[in-house]
Image (spheres, one colour):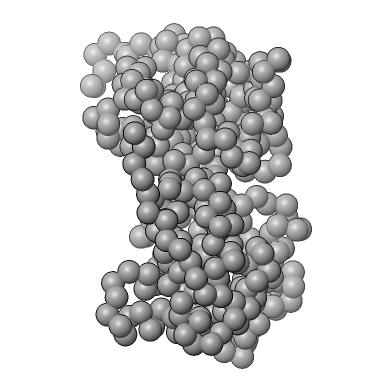
Length: 405
């Protein structure tokens, strides 16, 4: 017998929106208990509006703050943060009842204005996708913070010494890969600032190259036994286990990036042709890959339990609000599987290396591997030639007799 859930009765100015709000929450994957809890919050907010004599249309950000302050002053311990009011306000804004949220205050902040213009340049002029834009913007914010005064001046005084001092302070604190991200982002920013006339001289020359150590070591893939332990750790009796199993197979069999797995939609799978459309996470060059039988079977198994919501993302979050998982969500699935399986913690990219190494082991050419992985440059794929130890052994020359060890 299903347990009964108490449903609060909402009165006051927001009463007419309570039923729709409950349905809206349910469609976003919230449980009946969570819907009941959120309706109780709506009742509290509606009661405060009624006592203060405000209509729903007067529920501005300032009045939301006053509602929360009143609860804190009364000694309550729940619904005290601005974050707690995000859901009811989002619903009421969708209906047009509450004024739209104010856009970020970039007009009066020179730094934010520069970053907003730079972001538009990266998206509109460079055609970059979300991940590289976020990385470039983070590097720009790091460099510009403290260098832009309140009146917007300061950039015209930048010189090579400023760039060198910044890198000397930041790069030693980072790994080689993140240091390379910072320098790449800084080069992009300096080109933009010179292009727009914000700095009088091109300063890209002041950004040195970070030593690329990738070709000095083998790609870090996982042994087949470790991958099997990760897959076996997924409890496929549960929906989340079926989803995680499909994610791990997409990573280890097709060598996808975490962002590429997260970007797959229901419409990207061509079941008749046995193909899946992959949206490249580093640009706008999509590619079609054959869908292996075991990967397809895992996806079908998950789809039989997948929540029926409007979101067309293939893989969904298990915690409300319902929607597609993110790139970080995919990486978290790999980390959780490592902990369940009792193996050393690795990132999702290790499974990408595993897929490339397995393809090489079974006779695929480097060109074919590069096409599957979506590499733009052949030299990127060439790293995996070092994994083929059997072929390399035939090329190794014997050690001279009597030579020093």
